[in-house]
Amino acid sequence: MNVFWDEKEEIAKSFAGIDISVAVATEGGLITPIVKDADKKGLSQVSLEVKELAARARIGKLKPHEYQGGSFSYCFFKDALYLLV
Image (cartoon, rainbow, N blue to C red):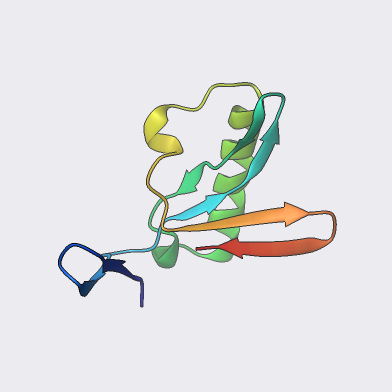
């Protein structure tokens, strides 16, 4: 289940799918490209998309829709994985 709390309406609202952001270190700092509809893809497809997005992020070629709006963010630091919600 992928939900968020709407402070204004004081209710939990659901997202239709799961979009996962992955933190990528760039010369200018971290950016979080998004794998859209990750819940509908296999691990190999998600992995391929992360690699492609990370490569484009490092050379500054992401478009705004590719890094805005993720519902979860993952960050790898050294040998640890962090989930940012």
